[in-house]
Length: 156
Image 1: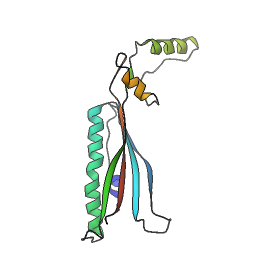
Image 2: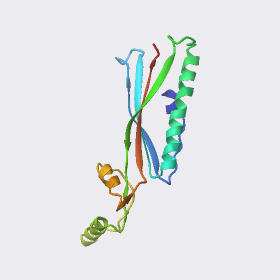
Image 3: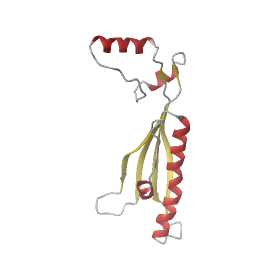
């Protein structure tokens, strides 16, 4: 985890690609060396290739981080070494409503009628991603959110 925090992960501005370490936790108290730690990383992109590249970049840091930590402490036997596991905790489909869709046109007309200013149509997150993605007649696949749980702890 220390290596990921130090690692400068670069994401492109276009296609929009972002990540966040949403939660970090571990240990039993503030003044105790933690026996385990975990973090959740959320990655999103408007482009599948960019998302997969970011996912690979993040996951590729884990073996090096573990090796660095074990070397730092001279952990040369499995009982002294730290390790890691990963688990995919979310893989949500998404889609895009075309600007010509009736619902988009109705929203734009309402905005104009009430003086809402110039609209900006862009991708964003929604709780309706599964229904949007399934409606293949009006939407296309283009945005995917991937969340990973990385767990580091002593190997037993």
